[in-house]
Image (cartoon, rainbow, N blue to C red; front, side, top):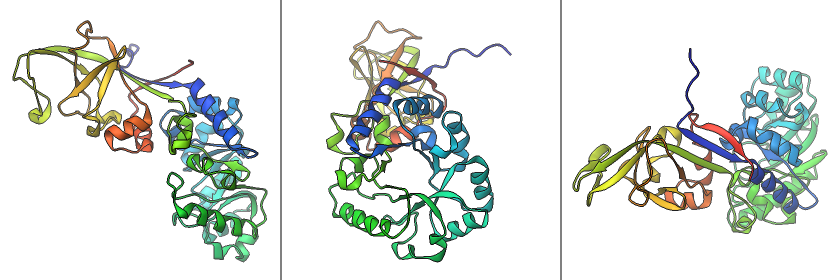
Length: 350
């Protein structure tokens, strides 16, 4: 088979911005050290690109959700620095954890029993302080089974850290109560937004995720966090429309005049959902509005401001996450993790 031609989509990760974001969050963590949530392929930006950058910046605690996410991370960091948030639901997962040296986050008394039955060893322990997803209940802290665990880190997760909610303090107080009753080496409560809540929430290790990759979950971080992801698409067609001609599915756009449009190789299969319809692409600072309905693989754009563009040229989709969230109604998390696998992923130092 001949070599494939280059893709018509590019996702660029600004590795300098990624490293700066981690260092900024580490500094904001005060005496605590910042870890890194690298689940979901580093929020869609690529483990092989992002984990070495985070490691070299100074991160030493890495968190994934699924056991299937472990092998790519282990290409870059030692197993004792990796924790799996979903714990050990089966004996097979417990055996894998022991064989690999990766730390499970025990999320229930039943998981503790599975872990101990497999031989036990160092682990982390999640405490549910009110989000009601994973974690032992505070009243299970005295369980004989929980007492047998060799707990490296005790963790909990904030439900409303991105809001000024009274629940934040309630969760912190509940965590502090349980923390004092379970032997452990380190404690961790704050996610990206939680870091901005203040020193009472930071403990020994913070667990930023979204903010590492350019998300801004609280206004206090707006001047600190830099965008990381950049998206480019190649023009695959340039067309001239007459006044009154329609564009795309359901003919939602009607040309108000004779005009030139472009078709880019990008669509909802790549994570650019129809919620982006009121947004625009850009070229050298000039705005290229989206026309009509976004398709699976194509988006039509207005080339009125860029008559020099030709088929094969590149245009960009501005990917400032807070601004994109306002435009689309999607969360900053969704904007990152929905990105598809047809992009050529590359890193760029700025």
